[in-house]
Each structure stands twice: as C-alpha cells, then as structure tokens.
Figure 1 (cartoon, helix red, strand yellow):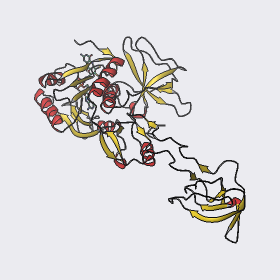
Figure 2 (figure 1 turned 45 degrees about the horizontal axis):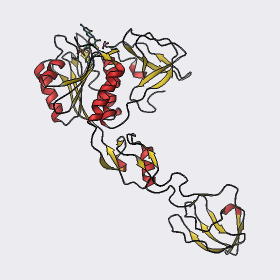
Figure 3 (figure 1 turned 30 degrees about the horizontal axis):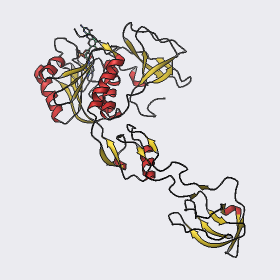
Figure 4 (figure 1 turned 120 degrees about the vertical axis):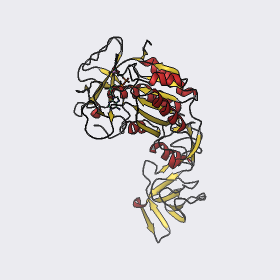
Length: 400
Ligand SMILES: Nc1nc2c(c(=O)[nH]1)N[C@H]1C(S)=C(S)[C@@H](COP(=O)(O)OP(=O)(O)OC[C@H]3O[C@@H](n4cnc5c(N)ncnc54)[C@H](O)[C@@H]3O)O[C@H]1N2
Ligand code: MOO
C-alpha cells in the first residue's frame, strides 16, 4: 500500500510539476485576455500621464492676472507653449497643459471680459496632473504571473498596450467513472445521480481552465477507462480530471488504467481527510491525470488540494495562497492527517462555521460554503481563533 504524503508536500509537488511545463507565452489582444495570466511584468511604456493634463475645464494661465486669451486646447490637442506673461489658453478637462503654464483656473472661478481677457483665482491645490504622477516610464506595475482581470486590462490599455504576452488557460477534460450513476431522473434502487458530471465543468471553468472534453459516465471496465483516457488525450486536454475509482475496489480501474498507459505518479494518496485517495499522475505525452475520489465532497477536497496548484503551476502563477478566517465554533482535528473542513461565512459576524451535512458523500454543506478550513495534523480548530482557509473557486457575489 502506498503511504500518503503530507498535504502541504502534495500541493507543492503538483505545483512544481505544473511549473516545470508551464504553457508558452502568446501575445493576446487585450479584449481576449480576461482570465489568462501575465507571462511578463506589466511595465509602463510611457510615464502616466504621458504629459501634464488639466483635471478641469478652465484656463491655463501664465504670469499675473488679467490674461489675454491666445488659444484653446481641447483633450487630444498638442499644446504649444505659453511664451508670454499675461496670456492664457482655454483648456478642457484632459487637455495637455502648455509649457509655461503657472496655474489652471477653473471656469467657475473666472470671469471673461469681451471674450478676450480673463481674470480669476487659482485654487490652492493645483488643478492639473503632473507627468508621471501615476507611474514613471518603465515602472513595473504588476509582476509576471498576475491573473488578468478587467482591472488589469484597463490598466494595460491606459499604458498603451495592444496585446499582452499571456500564458493561456490550460485545456482540461473530465471523465466521470461509475456504472451506478444515473444521468437523469430520481435516484433509487441502488443507483445514484451523477452529481459531478453536470457540476465539475463549471467548477473547472471557475478554476481557470477551458473544458474541452467531457464524458460521463465511463463504464466500469478497464477497457473503457483506457479508451476514455486516450480520447481525452486526443482532445488536446493538458489536465484530465477523473472522478471515482481511486481506491482498489472490485471495479476501481483508475490505477490499472494509469499503469497500462505508462503513467508516472506525482502524488498518490495524501494525508488529508476527507479525500485521501486523491492522486496526480503524468502520462508519457506530458498530460496530467488528476484522480479525484468519487465521494462527492472528497472530489472537491482534491480539486482545491491538487488541481488548483497544478493549474497555477501550468499558467506561471504563484501557488494559490490561503486566506484566513476567524472560527465561530470548534472544529476537530483528524489525527496525523490534515482536516479540510467545509465552512460557511456567517453574514452577521463574518466568522467561519463548520457546516452541517458535511459527510464526504454529501454535497449539501458544500453548496453554501466558501471553502475548507485547514486543521493541521495533530491540531484542532478553536472558536475565536483564526484558521487558514482554502477557498473554493467561487466568483465574487456567489456567496455572502
Ligand atoms: N476498503 C476501503 N474502502 C474505501 C476506503 C478505504 O479506506 N478502504 N476509503 C473510502 C474513501 S475515504 C473514499 S473517498 C472512497 C474513494 O473511492 P473511489 O474514488 O474509488 O470512488 P468510487 O468507489 O467510485 O465512489 C465512491 C462513492 O462515491 C459515489 N460517487 C462516485 N462518483 C459519483 C458521482 N459522479 N456522483 C455522485 N456520487 C458519486 C459512488 O457511488 C460511491 O458511493 O472509497 C472509500 N472506500
Ligand atoms: O476520501 Mo473519503 O472521502 O475520506 O470518504
């Protein structure tokens, strides 16, 4: 029997295996880059702003009042210098402030005589933005490995990027094993509904992959397991997630199928509860197989424990960070194993509470949880103290 490895070591092993074969950078147009990963630092191509910019509608003035109007600068115009004291130009918000300007006087703080001469008072805080106020030329704004979000895309556009050098989303496949699984209707008579086939693709997309192949269920024979894995390889998937069959029961064929395909284990059983039979192996062609245990909650323990670090490595991101949450109730440990305990965040006190109905075969607790509190080996979680948390890949707004 294989000895389970420590949970933290398992995460590190798959992260490193993924990082070793991280996808090659490709230039991607800004509007298509959401959800991808920066392959190089986002560095300014010019100072920001690139030129002194008026932040109000008004007058750019030189010398003491009154000022003779000698021109007009709209946003987008190139401003000629103001060369003489006692002159000004009308300026629009976003207009380039002419060289020689002493102040920008707001429209509402000024009077104009005969459409030619302006008087007025500048405010104490200058009403224009200096070159480089937001960022200097060549300054690194974000490191390589940053997930690209709409905020990153906007910043890149403001800097003058047309494309970003990105690591693409890994392509994934899902194979659901189990003859007992019904794909429709009400469970009974020994059959259960397949709860993973319909839900895991969405979880995988939230985790940052493109799901390119999906088969549920795969029959409980070695031949069909091998055929399904081969089809997943042929689909171009880099990460093949399987569910069920990770143990060594009469119809658990994952290990024999991996052996038949010449796979090498990166992680094979982990000292974590629930979900310990989880595994990650690599096929001779380089594809990863993530074997997620069939008990549905254990599937998700394996998703956050192994698949997320693997995807992070493949995209050149950092190992997913844990967050922290103050516990609202005690959580028991699981001896020498790490205990990943589903918690929900209470909307009133903000604390993490273990959920009811959190057995490894149940999904009721998971549906309103934010993630798993990490109870380390030999420890237990105490109410009122902070615990580390592995978040589920849920989107903002999907939980309180
Ligand atoms: N002799 C032992 N048996 C088991 C042990 C053990 O230590 N010794 N560990 C148990 C643990 S822990 C887990 S977890 C499971 C892992 O089993 P497999 O990965 O081989 O999964 P299956 O046997 O195929 O299924 C387990 C369970 O989950 C249900 N299932 C599977 N797929 C789905 C699905 N898509 N939707 C809904 N439910 C699913 C399946 O019907 C079984 O009830 O092994 C234990 N056994
Ligand atoms: O991996 Mo199992 O979930 O501990 O039931």
